[in-house]
Image 1 (cartoon, one colour):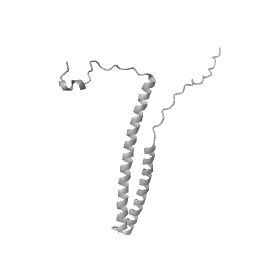
Image 2: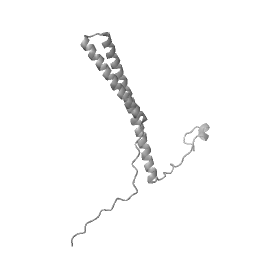
Image 3: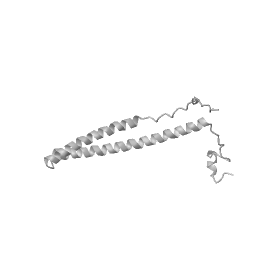
Length: 131
């Protein structure tokens, strides 16, 4: 019985009559799986954050360039043009800060899991009840 598989494809189809056995995991194996999942989540979060920082930085740079060009062209009165130029410089500084932050996030590694101590907690001295 080939379950509806065309005869020409029968040799290529793997036949499974029963589900694969489920192997129990030791506590260390389960901990390793959790750590792997944490690492995967970290990588997703880091990638999303880098993308957001890059998008914000580019938008700020474009706005600063636009303000700077309008200020240079003196489309507005002198005081407004000077304010636009000052704001453009501030935006460039913010963009540089975001760029540095983006590099830090790109180079970040997941925090190591706190090591479980094998030491016993110190014994407390118990007071004897007056008797």
